[in-house]
Image (tube, rainbow, N blue to C red; front, side):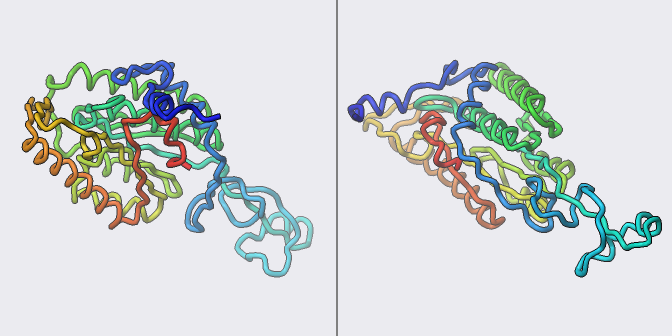
Length: 318
């Protein structure tokens, strides 16, 4: 029996376990492991030019030595093991398997623009829930998880690690940067090109065959980011998530006699209906610019709403 519509709506808008929608703590992100377990085990096929995503059932020329056997017609002559051949008097060839662990890297955008929330939680909090869920899924697949967490004030680089050590470093870093962003909102000088520098840094540290997720509200990505991202796409697999808010994309019904306090470019503003429409158009233009950028690069883009818990949007992550 289905619950009444009003009850289903209230359930969809309830905060996740341990969350208050503004702050971030370790139990809240540890609980995202259950979301990752609810996702299907989709095993993607690595491109031929990349390091393997999973251990291959077919032995061939790859990254990791498997065994030696007698040479068979059609084998690559470059894999002949001359030492075993000399010792046995019969031609032998080496067999290889693909690497088992694939590096998964998250570019986590914790810019000040994400510290906005009109309905359920800050976009930054939702983005951290998303990053942690993607991390838990990578660990569950036997991959290594790493991240580059970028804000106007700092960049934290986390080298890919396997198992829970990779997740613990990610959770610790997310909570640290988020806390710092909340407490030092206006205290430090900002780097307007911090996401460009993050893309350039990612270009240097990402190994061929890595899976890279871009997590952002899209507002800080500029045309200058296209070059580094294009270079990354030549040898890595890229995907992107856009975290939105109902007020910033015009989905929230508002009264005609509107008096809406918002913060933009470090300044507090009180918007009436006309001012809100102008502000809304600027928000939508930033979103369209990011969508156009990912389209040009051929990067698949998915949208996550901060007005709903991530548990209600798992179909988007599948």
